[in-house]
Image (cartoon, rainbow, N blue to C red; front, side):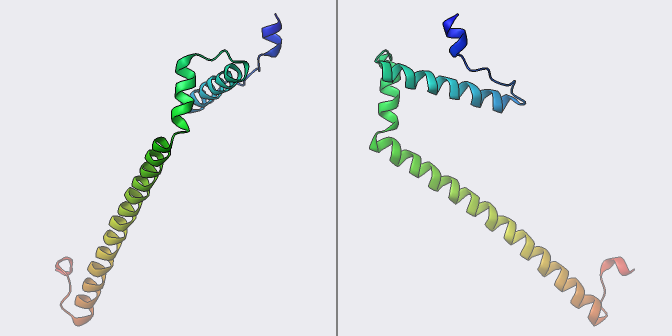
Amino acid sequence: MANEANTKKLRPAISPEARENQLVSLAVDLAEKQLSEGTASSQVITHYLKLGSTKEKIEKEILEKQKELIEAKTQSLQSAQKIEELYINALDAMRNYSGQGGSDDY
């Protein structure tokens, strides 16, 4: 019963992502408790040691830079599409202004 009194009562999650976040949070809390009490398994200790390693930090940084690059490429493609639309609209406007009109004028 003492465990039940110490257990936090969580609100039901409103989405699968929120539920996953709750479970991850609980797992991290438990790992922290085990580490502070000296009862953590070797797998838990190894996991957190790897998180703090220089290699892991560099890999995280590389992933962040790759994400930024993908976002920049996406924005560039969207910008190119908008410019293409502007050119098409400008050419159509010039054709109409010069009296040539478009194919939909016939």
